Image: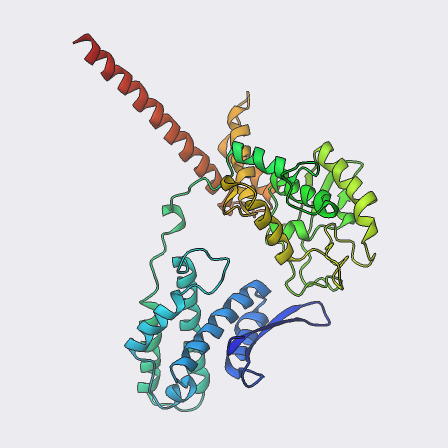
Amino acid sequence: MTSIGINKFVLTSGERYCIIMDNENKAPLFYPNLYLTIKLRNRGCSVLTMEAAALTLSLFYRFLRENNISIDERILHNRFISNSEIDRLFIFLTKKRSRRIRSPSISKLTLYHRLNTIAGYLLWLSETLYRYDTPEINILNAEKMVRSIKERKPRIPKRQDRTYENDGIPENVIKIIMDVIDPHSNSNPFEIYVRQRNEILVLMLYELGVRCGELLNIKIEDIDFQKNRIRIKRRADEVNDSRINQPLVKTLSRTVSLDKTVALKIYNYIVFDRSKLSKGNDGFLFLSYKPGPTQGNPLSMSAYHKIISKISLCDPLLNNLRGHQFRHTWNYNFSKLMDSMPTKVSENQQEKMRERLMGWKENSGTASIYNKRFINEKANEASLRLQERLNKTIRRKDENK
């Protein structure tokens, strides 16, 4: 256990909450938690935003403890974090601390947000500690420290300047995945009793392009088997959800159509499989089959990631498979479908359709990102065809000499 960490819990209202704990002294840290409450929770920020800030501040206070720095005393006595200490903090923040992160260091975007959070917190802490008459030089020095931290933020390209690669799953790899998740396949790595559930889970990721949080939030009541439709619904702070790490729906609520074959698989799963485990008190579609006290509870985020991870070990081509790649694949397939339509569908119409199906806000710009990826790929294909044609022309000239 680390000396300083995060404690997550559920309030009686269903609200998910987190606090930063000093695990050595078994006590919450006063100022960081006050900051989380005043600056984030009271302003309506999501629990994921709070958790990200809490993680950053817990890392910051871990750094302070390892370097024997009392930040409160430093600020009160006009002795701030020096440039060399900020350099050490920068290195400390870049180190990988999660097994799920495969690279030795965190991304530039994560580092950017961490430094930004710490700078914002230190500015707030200085203003809070200086709430009475304070020499102007102290305030100036505090602002100088904050600027020094912000100056070390890595440059992040603006959205319109970023290059977008297709992070989807190639067709040949999709075929392997479909063989792996087939309940009757010899390649299926799962126990027989969870194969039907896991097949439906992957099929819904692939055919609907839903996020993990959207998938794990689906209840039986959201499915209309007469019309073969499913409602993707936001359920923040759901009281009947026993999961502390509640899967959240980031996008807008919406209704999407279900393929008849998938709808039938879901129906059979509910009637003949899921009914054996259902505790009948929450109605979530995907349940835990693991023997023990959690059996019959809604499937957790960690269990979802374990399913994807186990699939990724079945074939070298599935290495590093992530659930979110199915969403990219759906968008790529949607672009291909629009491109093959006999009647041309305008880019604007495509964006509107994509926004509704993916649950994005209208004119958010997210839909155009996925279209840019497809356009980039088409441009690269055209470039290769042109090079091949030019090479053929050169070869003919050489042969005629």
